[in-house]
Length: 111
Length: 115
Image (tube, rainbow over all chains, first blue to last red; front, side, top):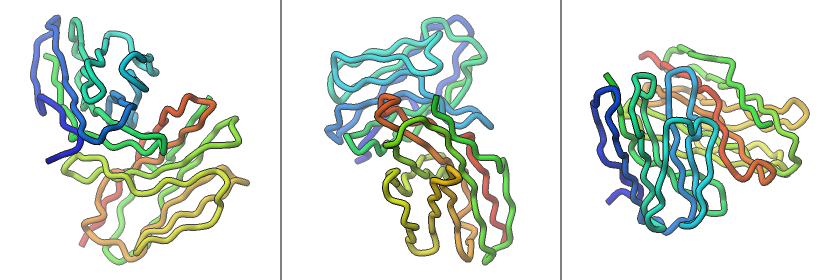
């Protein structure tokens, strides 16, 4: 089984809808991240959490919120989706080495 | 501020050619870590290497090699005798204690290897 899983893998939603992307990990890592990938822009950090009680904004947090329900679970919410949030979203975990282990990604399309 | 620049947006080579992917970074910290990740057409992100700022030795792993030069703030990646399976997007990334251990990525280089 994959160490980092994301659900859903693909999602099409309409402008204004609330959507949640979920991430679970079995690696036992404390650190979890949400990144967004857009063509030509690489991966940009949305939110990160270094333990269950720690939530931090990344470089592009506007329009997003997160919840760290447990050490193994970190969800990303779009409260009111807009078309420019169409992207590939990755969850990742890491230990103190800083190496990120990514989930398979969620392709989100906002119409 | 932390920044990673991958100036090559896309590179096309013919199989068996050697290819170098450039990565230039900016950081004010003296302790930092550099990474390369591969994203094949299937979309997953695969960790390739981590290098700390105090280790400037070049690293070789099979057909892959990495050249870290602090003097030019570069961490370049060379694939020797490229193969079609090397076709992917390659990302260089940087993190440091002074930046909260967050990983900053470059925009990526698309490598196309033609048979």
